[in-house]
Image (cartoon, rainbow, N blue to C red; front, top):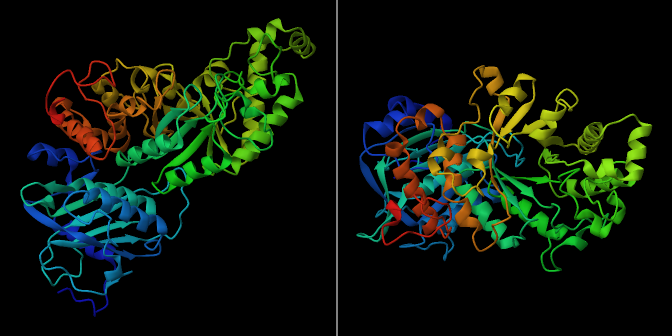
Length: 554
C-alpha cells in the first residue's frame, strides 16, 4: 500500500526524478526505434516501456494543486471516463468512483485486481482564464504501482487546467479496450510524457452564414476539435447570405436569417462559448466588413449604398459605424477571447464608385475607393480595439495598405504563399491558412499536402518565426451543412492539427511510414467516438469508402 501518512514531497520533484532516471527520447527517435506510437498529435517528448497495464473501470480522480478542484477538471474527467470505458466498464453510469476519494488522498482501498486504479491530476494555477498563449504544457506518468511508491499509477501534472485537459486527451488515447479480456488496458507502459504545443494558435473556422449549423452540431465539432488539441474555433457567423445572430442593440439584423428557426440567440452563443471553454477552446467571432455584409441591410436598408447596390456597406454614414460599434459592444459581452476577426476580404468597391451620394462624399474628401476601403477598415479596427480586442484581418488589408494598419493587427493569410513572411517582416503577427492546403472545402487536397504545409515556411529568422502565432483550417459552408460537415472536416483537419502541435523535426521524413498509419488509427478513433470522419485515402474528401475494407486501411 502507498504510504499516505508521511508528508509528500512536491510532485514536480518526484516526476523530475523519474524523468531523470528514464531520460526522454525525442518523439521521432522513439517512433523510429520500434513500433509506431499511436498518439495524435505526437507528443513533444516521451518514453515508453514493454508492460501492459489494466485500468480499473472505477478509475478514480484525485485532484490536487490550486486548480485541481476546478469544475472544468472534474467534468473533463467524467467525460473522458465515459469515453475510455464505453465498453467493459462503468462508463460514467455510476458515480465514477469519486466518492472513494478526496482531493489529494484516498478514503477507500485500492482495487487489487487492477494496475491503474486512480488518476491524479495536479494543476498548479487556480486561474481559469483562457487567453491566447495560455500554458497548455503537461507531464503524464503511467506506471504499475509497487505498493510503496508515493507516485500514483497515473499522474497528470500541469500549470493550468488547460494543460491538464490536453494531458487527459493523451491519457484517453493510451487506454485501449482489449476484446480478449474485455477490459481497458494501457500498452507499452511505463509512460513518461512531457508535452507542449508548437504554436499557441491552432484554429478551425466554421461558416454558419452559407448554411446554418444547429447548436448541437457546433458542439460536436468543438468536441472533436478537442480530440486533436485544436484550441480556437473561428466562428464566421454572418455573411452576405444570412445574418443568424441575435444583436440586442439592433434587433432587426437577424431578419435576414434563412428562417425563424435558423438563428442563434444570445443565450445560444453563450452556451457555445462556455461549452468550448470547458474543452480548452476559445471562440473567435468574425464580423466581415465592409464586404460580405449585404444581409445586414435586410433589417436596416440605410446600410446599403442603394437598394440596387448593396455592398460594401455605406462608408459615408455615421449610422454604419454606430451600428458596428453597438454590435461589437453586444458581442463583447459574449466573446471574452482577446482576438476578434474583422474580415476585410474580397471588397469590390464598384458600388461606391457608381452610387451618386458616395461619389460625392469621396470627391469632397479627395478620396479614391481604395482610400475609402482603407478608411473603413481602420475605423472598424479602432472600434474593435476600443472594446478591448486585438483585430484580425484577412490578408487583402495587408496587401492593400500595410503601413496604415494598426500595428496590433494580426494578418490572416489565405490567398497563397509568401504572405506570412511579408507580414512578419513588417512586424505584424500572422495566422496561416493558405487555401491551397488548409481550406477544407477544397475537396481535392490530399492529406499529405495538408500535413506538410508549414506556417513558417519561407521564414528563416527565429525571431520572425515567433510572430507566426499558428494556423487555421477553414471549413467554408457553401457546400457543407449538417449532413456532411464532419466528414468534410475530418480526418484532413487532423493533419494540420499535428503540424500545429508537434515538433517539426519529429513529423518530417517519410510520412507514409511515420504518419499515415497513425492518421488511419486516429480516424478510426474518431469514428469510435461517434465522429463521422471520412476515409483517409479518398481522392476527394468526405466521399464514402470505395469498397469493403478495414477502417485502418481506408
